Amino acid sequence: MDNDHDRQDHGRQENEAQGRTMSRRRFLAICAGAVVLAGRLAKHALGAAQGKPVLRDLRQVIASDNAHARTIMWQADVKWTDAVVEYRLKGAKAIESSPAARESFTDDGVTVELYTARLCGLEAGQPYEYRIKADGQYDDWHALQTDDGGAFSALIFPDSQSNDYTDWKHLAQGAAERNEGADFFINMGDLVDNGEDHRQWEAWFDAVAGIIDRIPVAPLMGNHETYNEDWKVREPVAYLHEFALPANGSEEFAGRYYSFDYGPAHFIVLDTQTEEAADFHQGLLEAQQAWFREDVKKTDKTWKIVLMHKDPLQYRITNRPDRKEGFSDEGRAWMPLFDEAGIDIVFSAHLHTYRNRGHIKDFQRDASGPLYILTGVAGNVRYPGLWVDHALDKVIAPQPETDNYLTLCVKDASVEIACFLPDGTEIDRETLRK
Image (cartoon, rainbow, N blue to C red; front, side, top):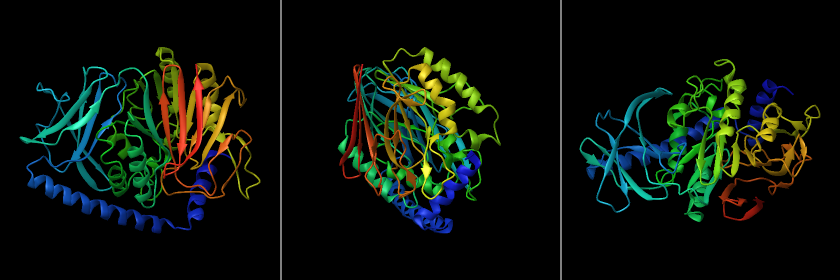
């Protein structure tokens, strides 16, 4: 089945599987947005009363070198000309500052002021704290821990797109509480159900409040980030503004794919939305593959990990005899490069089901190939009974499927991956050693 039909079927199955029309989804998104807005108005009033700069969606964003740098972003309803991020070693008296660049960002008919500051020259492995200063007022101090180059742990959240972001918030907050030592978190694409709907972005940020201000996010772009409110493909305007990601050397494809280091691992984040980008950009796949080859040559890290939204395997679909088991276009394009580069682990998403496929090389089971993990679903958009098991599936989440999250613990000599249900029940664990 070609990609055009695949995308159309995917959207149709999503609606039919959940028994909701688009208007129903829109209604729930508006309701969720109204709840978030009410909470934000209350925080706005409290902040103003306390003499603090009124800002929202304060976040740390992953940097290419997290031992010495970090990106801080937030949004506001005012145009500050003097906004800075002040930072210091935790408890120290000496304070440094970095100016914040302001950008007016308009999407979905809503304009906000987006602020970005890049902190550089940080000391590796040190506890820092930072705060926002604007208009002569100070926000509270927030934690910031730099990478010490050694063992670390991260949270991995699959697609968080939702009709109502309550489940996503419950999952994210619960996972963070159980893993207080996590150094950063990954969101595997399809962060929101509709990339143009500002209410959904507000609900997404609300769900990770108290997490994203103290540990950085490493986001992926999914196909849903490219949809407008009429469910037509467009440029992923909101996603590209909301996260100031590490540079990839391309002006045209900036923010779409990137890499970063943490501890003994090198992460390569791919943009698998080549079909969605085709009307706006030519050569995305070729440019990205050339970048990938050069990027992976430069790293001397022990572990090489790929993050990609669309899954490299293709599944049969219940009651669809024409849909064959095999490998997707993304798999055929990228898996030979993963073999060539000696990639250790490939995490994917998009299908809203958790599957551990074990190691694959040259399109077949092979212990010398990368470990392939399909990460599952973190929101409430689920496809019960849709996918027929693949011959390469090793572990499948309990059915009917609910949401889940993963932990990633990396050391010099080993990597441990575990998958959990929202209540913390473990459903899979895999260990790699070198």
